[in-house]
View (cartoon, rainbow, N blue to C red):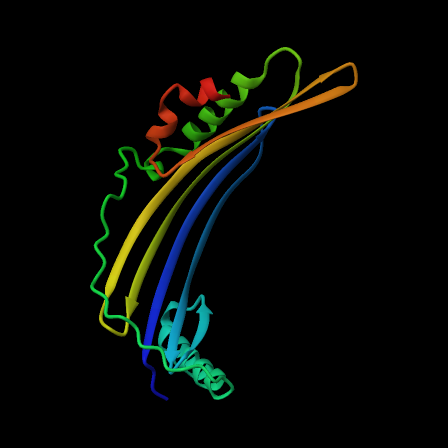
Length: 194
């Protein structure tokens, strides 16, 4: 079966987190997720397939074409003519100064403990602190020969403090996340926010 157009997006994500409850480590985690989405246009109908098998993108493309063709047999949509596109220019991506991967886990845990401790004031009965970092890489290519890609780091923390007095509870939370490197957390700002 022939296609009029196809495109493939491959997304690779690495994420880590540290969770503290009242200064005690409750969880540390690392996750890695990779997958692809493949779209195919046949006539006036799209087919979409996702896969975690990056070696199987050719088969996923064939399946997307088959789905578009099958859906098109049941549709009265007119043929879609896509406008020509040029290769996108990926620009203005933030530059990180300190790669979180270069920071030892013990240093990260110490920072999260300091953030947590800065919120533990008189009257505060509970503090929940989360540190998270991730890096998402996206690759794009299509049947017109267009290829592009980028990588974005994200980092930050959230903190929730609960105050208790005379049986009454009040909670407040703050968060600080950005597309940045570890330099976001090396300043005194996280302690002031907490």
